[in-house]
Image 1 (cartoon, one colour):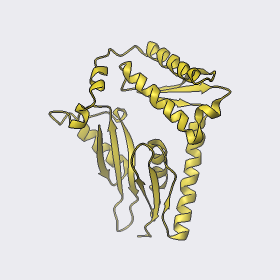
Image 2: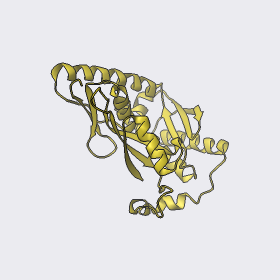
Image 3: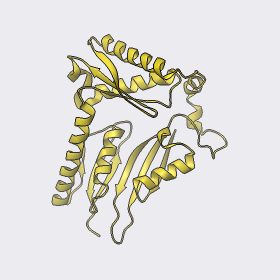
Image 4: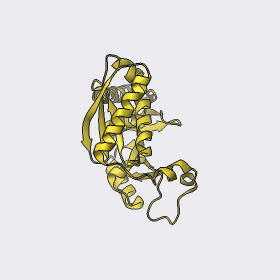
Length: 236
């Protein structure tokens, strides 16, 4: 299910979501739709979209129609969640089989363990193909593995796939892109529309530029891969 919240900062918007949805912070994913830093005469404004795994907030008596449409999710919730060791083993094996089914030999292992989050490292001579252009193959594979995790009764667990430290390198590149774009927008006084990005990448752009007073960011488009527009709004 999807909800939207606003706040003066990202933290304030997320805190509002936690209160209204009655969830823990790790119980949902956050996508930043718009970010404006505050000035002397203008309050900051952050608009977020919250993605919750097919459940209604505790304050509501019944699920919304969108949630009712997901019959398979109702079935998956009845699955008894596996113990951590068994769950990890199945996820690792599934990831390896999918990649080998694509025709690429690989080794998979646990990269990190966090509360409701599991990182998986993929090692292969064909890592560049597995990652794909701008990480799209890796994103598609990660989505597939997360669907499988849900079928194991662990919809609460988020699986992060990485290979050759791509995620870290991509994050650093996006931070540089954000600052360079902000400078271009400030110099030209014209907005710049960035390439389509997944929710995690867009959030990096929004968060990086959130504290710059004369810069504003907005997400545009539909679907998973939206674009971030960086705008000049002048100094307060």
